[in-house]
Length: 382
Image (cartoon, rainbow, N blue to C red):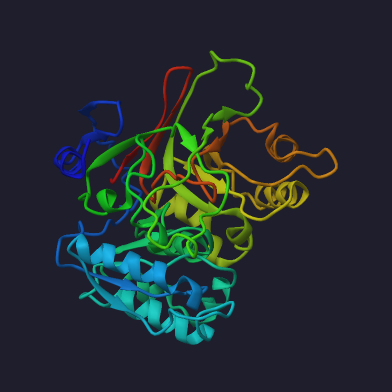
């Protein structure tokens, strides 16, 4: 299915555009809870729209400027205009002082002439911009797509939780020209062109990449080096191929290393998000970037003790490159922290830093299907 076919099918409200070999079928819109506010979705991207490019965490260093240039050119070839921020190019750990990064991100999100904001990648210290952000002011802005993952989740989760505006997790600008990322997964550009009310379904990928992409060596790369089989697993039921589950809820989540700092702060108010926007409960997703298995385990316990899984209908856990620590494996970490939960824990999913990734719309109403013959995630922009 090419991009035109995807948009033709998915652009109609209530139609599930299935990627890969999954076909298409009518999708009924759920009845809205009278007590819940509606998630707000951006207008579909159109040719000629302006995409703002700023780095609210790490900037792009000189060695990767050729990759950035190639990716910006790819946006132009798609018919989009680009607005480059001042907080963008830097070899330091952040692109600019915290206040400047916060001001530029805010300005792009509130500028009606900008249709989407697409940072080049994540980083390490986005959290330091929080004192300079006004989420009530951001809430009053016109919704637009904010696309990113990794350290961008530090902002994207609170932005959706506190404003009710959907965000897209699963790509960054340096990965934007990679299309398709895998035959059965969505591409950011197609999802960003969907209207509110549309639906789309992704199947588990076939293969994944085990290493980081070397953008410096190949600045014009348009594919991932996918070599290893993808196998989604259900914690505690790995030996039972007949085990099947279906779970439904509002998607929310991000990279554990950075969103794990948010419980106990106003930026991590999942209770308020559930009350305001998600009476259906949460499909909560996570990936582990840099934690070893012991750190991974501790942070999962932390989220659990903080009550972040209280309203979850299932946990969706991405692949991790973490190596065993004194015979303690990443699966041991999941079992230790999550093994006695009464909700499904599906792991080794296409989420995180070992590409390809599912496109996950924070705030979308999603249905996970996990069985011997069907491993998929459907999302409704309702």
